[in-house]
Length: 316
Image 1 (cartoon, rainbow, N blue to C red):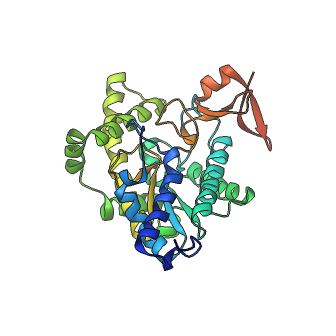
Image 2: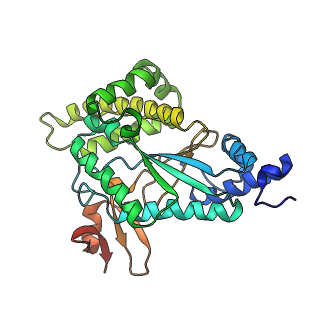
């Protein structure tokens, strides 16, 4: 076999082996609702195809990860509106994962974190100023931690600073979103889409504060907004693909086998849908860290501050 330091000069079979080795590095962190027993690289042909071009060229692999939007507006879930230990650990994990890939593929890998808070802010009830603060703090955290394999990409890179956030959201929808009828049909006929719709509806219901109507009216409103979130999520994914056409597509949502996207688990959590921006970190006595809602972490541990700001909870 040719040297893995120059995969682009090897035979196709050698390049396929490198792609399989990279994918095998990702598989232990796959986020899915499927049973994961027996996962192997050959069960993910879409991902092997996404790896083929950079490996053949001997170039770094680019992963795109839509996510890291903003903190949940529900104070029972999170410690505030700025990144905390959950984001810190998740960013460290992504940078370290790129380092592990470099061990099997020396050109290495990078992750473009496609921060999508402004895409959804009017639907999830988070002010755009809080999302700006979150994005700026996220970039500062990447720099402070020396995470050289990570970049942050958001609507500012797409449309610049001259438009309002509402104008940018309108452009995203007009240019890239599927129709509501198309999405409703998909949700009725596709099990992963139905699960995603239900998961988003649940998050919206939990995160809505001060709703003036009845519980049933709130449920109807959340179902309506869930379709809006899904439409814009599809649109943001298409927009990211336009700007990063050769990238390997990661997702913070569970993804089934056969999907064009690969679900990635950032940290340990009891709920497969839980993310650092919907929760906080509880550090156990043995050093293990786990994501959970603030109300539960507060019951089990004491608050730890970092640079004067709430960071996480320490059990015991």
